[in-house]
Length: 113
Image 1: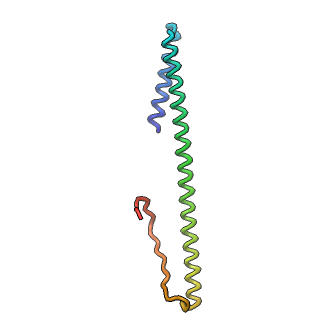
Image 2: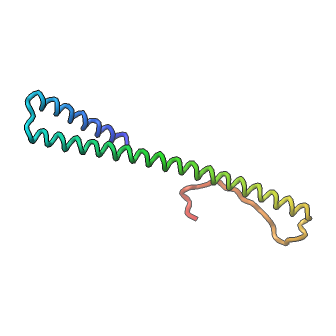
Image 3: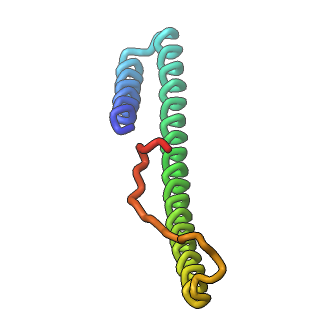
């Protein structure tokens, strides 16, 4: 996350300083090769970091959408329960021997059912 990004930017700054120092002293072929390799690796790491941040944002959005759908589903279930209960009361409970109950409890994401 944030630490990795800071490390990447520090590496990029070090690369730029190295390039500036090499330019002043006249860079050797190995310095140029090393600087090019470091630049390519830094760019690849920055690209991957941005890609992961996008994946996290998309995953967060999916989670929020799922939570909204779950809340809407629970609300629809409660409405249906009260409709059924109202019909049963209107009929005087004549058509069934079963008892209808609805229990609500808080959601625990760590619970295994």
